[in-house]
Length: 492
Image: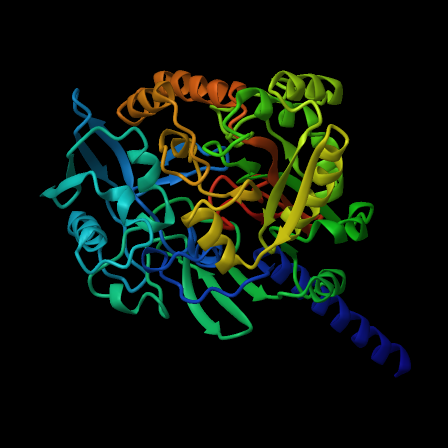
């Protein structure tokens, strides 16, 4: 009797264990710091929206992979006219939205007419302004005509802002998102979680996961405890200061990659003494990137020498353009007419990487005679004073928009860099479609702005994911916002 009862209990335990393993092999729980305000990426700017739905619930004509390259998505192929003004997209057949309705060319036209409408609330509407017309050729063919060539057009079609929505469900996507992706929306418990399930009629290759739950945890200590307790299976971007808890724990893997966040010592190029190239070169020589990375990002930032993400195929490593050399910095300051240095202000927004970097840079600059007054600001004040009114000497901020080197071609942008050569190269880049030519042009711009020391190029913000050691297929880098589920699976 006792033996039988023990045997029964053991069998039950084994069954429960097997059931848990089975569930674990097809389901995932992901901790994210911010809850999205809504779930429609075509009608909101918050990164938290794309974290949940981009390439999971919603898809575009193209998609961006983890190298930052453009891949086909709902469009299986496309042709571009010789003048670069007409794009003809062939759409996948047999695609359905999660409510069972058919996806076709009319949905594509609806989506872009909605983006470009006068009352559009799309956060990146300006990116799609070159589109003159969207024409339905047949149910599986769409033609888009541009008013001017746009070398980033296919990339921009792959952003969350341009995912395809249906007219039947567009107005309710904020709370009940219906897309064509490999996962369908199930439930949103406000303040707690969003649940997705694999869409079985999905047109493409089915993901290994059958269910994904995004759990909202804003506090680092709570996230740490949830990971250690197994309440969540991972998080895409964990606080760097707490990573040592997991680095040597065999139950977890820490994935360190880069984001699109170029962190710079932004410089007012129109204001003396920063309008002097020798002064900017001196500041570049005074920056010890590794010291800044160690102190401000706990060693997880990726050093950069120009304004481009290191994971991008176009990236040039220009970190040696002005190597750390305090004596060279002092000599350049003397040549520029500042043998005793000068004083300046450094305005800092309320993010840890900026405040910590500011303290380190102030110490480094003091050693070459540049005395910085640190001014801490809230975001609203920083946006008004620095970004809008250009009332600053120096500031520190991460530029998180993908492929944003074009800001150096705008003399009215807040750091006031005015170089006709860069402006001409950028205009040529925008009008060029050939990838090899685009790479050459982008790298020319990267090199010029590095040599001109337009800003102090510090580091690329790291993506620091912490995941269950048995999980595979997570993105190490973040070339675009999102936690893409399609390749994530539990190891056998």
